[in-house]
Amino acid sequence: MKYFNFPKKIGIEHIFLAVAVILGSYLRLQGVFTNSFAFTYDVGRDMLALWDITHFVDLPFIGPTTGLPGLFYGPWWYWLLSPFSLIFGGDPRGIALIMGLLGIATVILFYYLGKKIGGEFIAVSLATLASFSHVLISLSSQIWNPNIAPFFTILTLIVLSKIYTGKKPAPISFLFLGALLTLSADIEVIYGILFSAGIVFSILFIKHFKFYPRDILLFFAGILIVLFPRILFEVKNSFLMTKSLFLFFESKDAGGPNFIELIPKRADIFLNHFSETISGGNKTIGAAIIVVMIICLVFLYKKASSTEKSLFKTSGLVMVTFFIGTVFFGHDIWPHYLVGLPIFYILVTALTLNLIYRKLGVRVSVLLLACLLFINFNPISFVRSLNEPLWEGDASVYRNQLKVVDYVYRDAGARPFKYLVYTPPIHDYSYQYLFKWYGPTRFKLSPDVRAKLAYFILEPDFEQPVRLTNWLGDKKSYGKILKEEKVAGGITVQTRLIE
Image 1: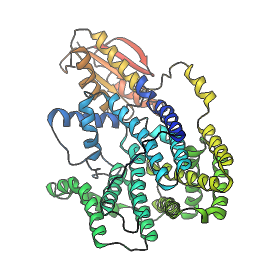
Image 2 (image 1 turned 120 degrees about the vertical axis):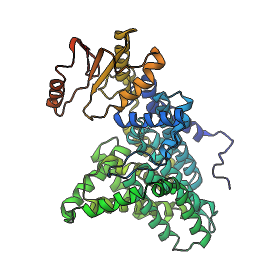
Image 3 (image 1 turned 180 degrees about the horizontal axis):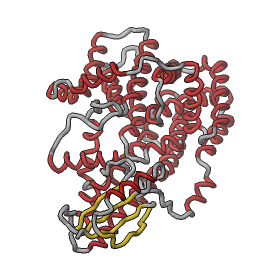
Image 4 (image 1 turned 90 degrees about the vertical axis):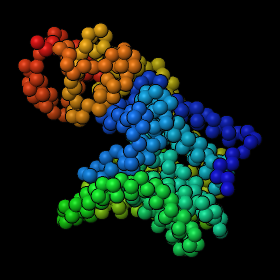
């Protein structure tokens, strides 16, 4: 079965797609060109893991830690990135490039989905809205495992469209669906659980519980394929994560959430998230768009095709599942819990525009699409930004950390040296990686813990400055301070000599 069969003829819609891809690519990849993407401690942790995989062929069966003690993600994030880490010689810019390319692939896949479900106008609408969405640009501009969720979400929707359009869909669709839903939980556990629940609810509702036994078996086979490495880890380690999960639920506060307080708070969070995706962060415009869409659906929903109706229902059920789930969750909601929902916001918006297109014609619908694009991508502001000086950023910017490492090596010259790092997150994984990969690769010298020359790399601690003061106080007798210089992004480097 061919899942991706793109047309060979070039039409006006392909020109729009090309423009969206080119501009969207620049917006996503400019951080790679300027080394201005975030290189935080968890990115450093992942790069160290990739180093071990590519240099020592140490294939892991678990991945990064989750927010729950003793519970880990599966290894698929590391397995996905390992070949690219090898291809790019361990350069984090290569991984940042892959993140951007996955974001661009999401735009192209949106176009493909639109062509299959409704034709040229909805295809262009989906692609352009995705290309210029502030949220999707931000996600595909930074290295972090939850940020690839939109790519796998759109793949899931493509598989669903195959299931919805046929009376007897290809059995392999259910294998893919099980694997993709399980991968979503491996990308971000809260998002993956709620997303999978919403998709399962919707497919049961839309298909009226009518499935062949083979389809059900293939669905669970897809789940087991993704879970298999973690199952092996559990068996080998006496079910460590299973025990940790039970301990977590046993220790939870039994008081329960206050629904009366949480419902308006959650509604505000979802409105903010929708507005960041569709209306450039303007909540008033975002709320107006939602009202217009509801009105259009009341009067035009009957004109939608069966596949479009199924996708409307799926989007609605997924969003309702997330809303109810986050209300019952009761705790603070972090942005990565909702990381793939922008795909559904864009889908519902484009589907509604397509209904307007059928009812009122091309002029009104194109004008509305153009207004949405202008709100998200103001060409005047974009051109003006090209002439602005390069943004310096803070201590987490990759470019600034490179300048610090360059400074240390150039100041040390051929002399052996060691380094200590103060960073608010405590873990200095990013510098561990740079002094393992970048420094030795460029300067042919590795730090030496026995060296008398020491460099104290001090990142600013704006939230609690006293912690840096106390840390330096504890190191007061650690050698003589020869000089101190602020290098970049607020990062200070002290040069000390241990006598």
